[in-house]
Length: 198
Image (cartoon, rainbow, N blue to C red; front, top):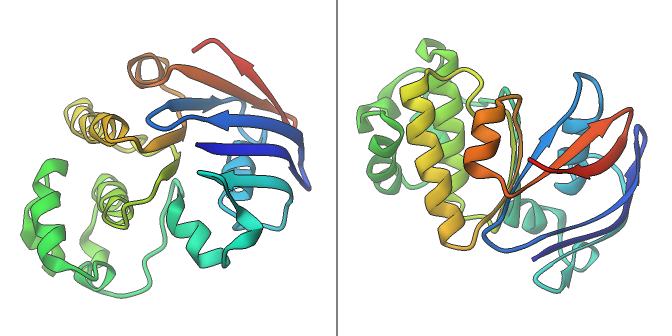
């Protein structure tokens, strides 16, 4: 379980929150309201204060990279630091086995990043994250660039992760998607976080 007490940073008011194993909670609110700020603070990507723990282990008790591998943030537009797709996947065999579940052929690892569409970038970035095997996924609009058929593939993968105890906190503007995946919803506006019904 992810436990958050008094988390705050610039642009985010203090808040408390528990995310259970295998639970998906949606995050919604107006643009610029603080949704991405919230996810980045939880992932310890920006300076913040508060007490966070995962399965009883405090965030402060572990090196930042270890926390970020367990509590992984996926940006709406992920970074790519090499020219080739395959360079971003340390285990090509595991990647080749997973990519068809995203509607992508294993040969995608041979592509240059420059040829990827927005939707392909989103799917490959999520595959890269899933292969790390985090306990918590912090997803910032993971299907915004996908068509309905591909969105369905991604949602199936996310449901599989939920069934295996992975927790998900997901920014989405798709109310139907929210109803399909989430059991609770957070509303973020002007840096204030409140819980709503999905």
